[in-house]
Image (cartoon, rainbow, N blue to C red; front, side, top):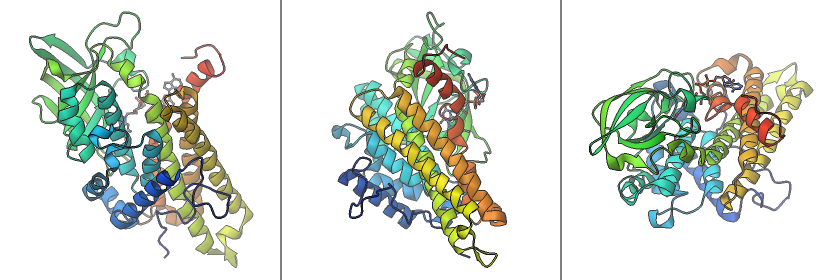
Length: 407
Ligand SMILES: Cc1cc2nc3c(=O)[nH]c(=O)nc-3n(C[C@H](O)[C@H](O)[C@H](O)COP(=O)(O)OP(=O)(O)OC[C@H]3O[C@@H](n4cnc5c(N)ncnc54)[C@H](O)[C@@H]3O)c2cc1C
């Protein structure tokens, strides 16, 4: 039985121009080289069988993580003083390439790059020295803990995790759920209510840096259907004592700090969805070429071809939005609407492509020895995370079209 490759036989970025190695708008020569390097690492370290094995065992790929660290890929987005080069456009390339194979590592990198951005933008000198330096070298991993059992989309209003100021620091109590990587994290960035909101529910929330071994912190791994190569946990905080220096940025402004990173997170989520969709589409095209039916192959049937073409079209349309959004953010602008549109388009493309893939694979789609079912499960994440598509449509209705606020 042919094993679908996780590495695209097509150019990762569509270029209609013969003789051009890459699309000059999406990929400069440096980004094309970065893309090629990440693909090489994926081929060498995380071939499809290994990705499926780790997914079955619900295990993080430490070998791939170390290889990414050795290549400086974890430092992208950090200042040059921390060994960083490149920005959101380069991060999106890395995430897309990972999601086309080991999707769980792409999800870790989305959290990781968010941490790099937060510590670079808001961290104190000491926090950067102690944590950012290790983060970018692959010597420390982080978790970002915002969502709670009572709410994700409406978290600012329902947040019950709180920190009270005591002499010399803070005491943190509460409960977070659906948090990536806490079981293996060396430190967490936790959002907690520290004051009653005065003007808006997003005020009075503080971001706290919590070392993973702090007494009173207990993570439990949650069994999930998706992203099984990166643990999803719930965490309880009981009487967790933290020094005053645990505050990241300004006390009471933690949620505003998170909002300032969201465009980047959406762009990277779009890159993940595009990568996974691409991996799934390539596997499906290759199956449609080989699978015989009615004296021909599946790929010869117009109904099958049209679905595959519509998938390719949806991917490239989403990529167009992503490339524009990332270029604006990278140039120092704010791509609020475009990053939301990229995330919606990419996650919906990924759901369509993987759903069609499952149908075109027929019974084989349900085989746990083939990756199509893993992408089909994994891409569900990006429909509702980091923020759900209905909410993004609410935002776009208000901000892009000037309609009344609908939530
Ligand atoms: C594998 C995984 C990893 C995750 N990693 C992290 C992490 O590292 N850190 C973290 O903090 N969180 C994480 N999350 C949580 C994720 O961000 C939330 O699941 C997400 O924000 C949605 O929140 P919710 O699940 O509470 O859904 P809800 O808020 O209950 O929303 C459910 C659905 O209701 C609809 N809906 C809600 N509000 C509206 C509205 N105003 N208008 C229209 N429709 C609406 C939408 O269709 C939405 O999908 C993770 C989740 C998973 C499953």
